Structure formats: C-alpha cells, structure tokens
Image 1: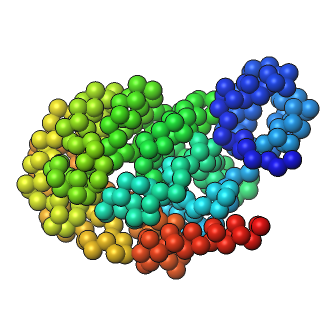
Image 2 (image 1 turned 90 degrees about the vertical axis):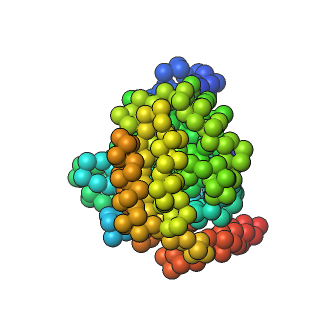
Image 3 (image 1 turned 180 degrees about the vertical axis):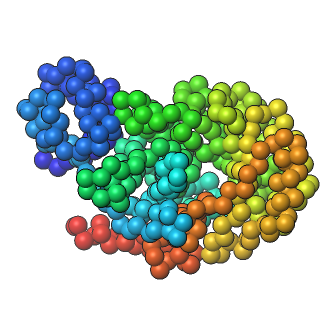
Length: 376
C-alpha cells in the first residue's frame, strides 16, 4: 500500500470521520491531534490513550514524518534559516528568530509567490504551488524540535511563541489552508498561541482580508510600501486590482484587537518611496486607522538595482510620522547575512546567496526534475 496522506493535513472533522469509520468515539480525534500538535509526538505507537488496534491503523494509513531539512543557515544575529523540502522535492523556507522575551517563527505559505513585488526575491521566483495546512504547521514542529536540539537532551527547551506569515508566498492567496493552520495554532489544546501572536501579512487581497476579519481575526500586517496608487501599482501589481481606496475601506472594518491595531510594513528604498512627500501621503492613508508603521530598510538582493534609504533620510521620514502620533519603529530585518531577511527568501543554500533569484529557482527546478527522473 502506497501512503500518500500526511496525518498533519487532517482537520478535526477529518479525524472524527476517520475514527467513526473505525468504530472509535469522536473524542479520540482530539486526542490524536493533541499528541501531534500539543506534544509534538509523531509516532502513533506512543499515543498511550489511543487503543492499540487504532494505533496500528494510524501507522498503516498515514504518513507521520516531518519535511526533510535540506540546509540550516545560522545567522550572526542568532536567527536561523531552515531550507526544507516538500514530499515531492520542492523547496520552502522558515526563519527561526529567538530573542530574550519571545521565539518568533517566520513561516512560508507557498512555494514561491505570484505577486511579483519588485523589491522581493520570492516574487521573482514565480509560484510553484500552495503549501498544505500540514506543511505550514510542520514548520512549527520543526522549529520546536530544533529548539530542543539546541537546548540539549534532558534540558527544558523554549518553544515558538509567535508566528508571522512573512515567509515565502502570499498567505491570503492560499486562504483556506492558512486559516485552518491558524485555527490549530491558536487552539489551547494544541499550540495554544494567542490570536495576537499569530500575524498574517498580505500584499492587499481585499476580499480575503474581509473574509479573514469574519472567520479568524488574527493580527494583520499589510505590505504597503507606498501610499501613492501609481507608484504602488508599479511596485506591487496587486494594487492594480485592489487600489488603495478599496484597501483602506476593508481595513477600516477589520476587527484589529492588538495594541497597535493594524501593522503596515513599509520597505524604505533610496530615492523611491522615502521623501517627506511620500510620508505625507502615508499619513493621509492611515488617518482613521489604529495603526503602526514598521519602517524596514530595504534588504538588497542580486539584480534588484535598489538600495536602502540612508539613515538620515530614514530618521526624517520616521520623525514626520511620529510627530503625527503614528508609531513608526525602524525594523532591521534579522538573518540578512544568510538571505533570510524580509524580501530575501528564495530557497538559497550557502554559496548561492549572491545568485539572482530566478537562477536559484531554475537550479531548484533542475534538482526536482533530476530526482523525479531517478525515481523512474
């Protein structure tokens, strides 16, 4: 029998149906999920409160392994990029970012991305496919396992406390899988994260933002980068479909319960979007919203032809916002030295960090095809 279904992809309803088909009570479904997502145990034989006969069926009918880790690249700032493979050999990335008060994990939601934002390496790769909810959740399990490994056997390890959907892909372009993964993250029986500690970042898919506000209002971050329609459309093609007026309308209705409301990500690009005139348009756009603006110095990548705003110009931009009561911290991305920072994720190994993203994407594609051919 060829196993094709990952146990991590099943929902509570899926497990209840499976249990019913095997003569088990519905509550066993929750016990199975608690072993996996609550305790990080992926060996059915260890599910001690599940009947032995059922454990055998679980082992026989589902795949229980985590994705294969291809490469770990530690950064000088104590973050770590994890390059991992999907079951069929595609590549995606996660970034583990421990700090004194929290452990943040940046997760991917797609292999590649089709948004084609000009300042982002991932957008230059194109979209290969969506990740499943199980592959999204597996990134937390892999990160927690890595934290245990770093702590050493027998020592109590830290666990992921915050998840940000700021890795490869546009999360709301993979809406169903992302939302179902978020449900597991915030369930107190499983990962038990607060809604405020799960942040979904989007380039501005208006209908999906509206749906998210009704279905599961986790923390929301908007990749804005310009408050000028013409310029934003040039930088981010999504703006041609959902211009700023439509975006603001849906944001005004979003139930943002965090201390700062909605977070706006604003990459500062030298000579592009960093003048006081741009700051004035940004102030006008966020007026009426409970908002914070993260100013992010551009993380250049090969072939981009863009540089980050200099420190003096950035301070002036920041002061203009803060003088108008808009929190505007400068966020220096972690993992820049291993191509793990904001806008840099492109499935790169060590030795490929200076390669153009399309060349890396072609290299990964060739590897995938070679592996597929070798399997017959």
